[in-house]
Length: 341
Image (cartoon, one colour):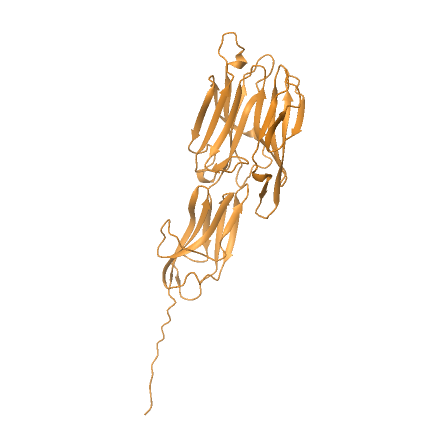
């Protein structure tokens, strides 16, 4: 069989990203071609988008193409996509969508839905057609990263097979998942990945091989706390120093504290506390602690006040923590005035 065109679609947003410490993160990309049945392997460097001829001619047993990207800091490799090409093996593609437009690796939050688009072509149905041409297998794996994990150096052979089904028809279909199935007691704090793969059926020329595969990363819901001011405290002098503790801030988020008069009401637009704004632009969630003082200028009158930590992500604005307190800085002087005549 002649060589075939192979394409890479990585869309790495300029191939660089900024980590929290302003470290430049870059990616190197290559396609690995595996021949069947000889299992000869050839690697070819590729650009984020484009097409080229396969490095080796396609044998009767077909060939598998694996698209890899390698991150330089920390050194991590990701298998982004797989395609299998054969004389009569069906073609298939998988695309995963979420409410997060980030394109390097699909991702979403543990409380959000995601969608899997599957397209099949080349499936046959004749009595004399090879069995490997009549159907494919769809597998769904889930794998937790563990507490605080980020997927670096993950052994994906340990993923759990959650479901398996046989597909017989060409065309496109979309699978909708309201929430992830990654295991964990606290459903808002699970982190890990879900992988969807299409496999060919084994026959005499080649083993069952992965035709297409994609995964989505699932990150936990952020949480936070405010310390330094007790709930319903009465403050009569200078405002105390406060500590904002934030856990699992979404990889692309802006977090800040605000104050406003009155009791806590979701959706209230207050005044940002100076020194509390935190912008995260990374590929994994972050934990942060901020200590803030000297904010008397924004709590500028007596009465009931509320302080909140808010985080804004692609999913909207969420409140992580709040505390309400009272301010009474009115000075009352008791005394008497006398004269001697």
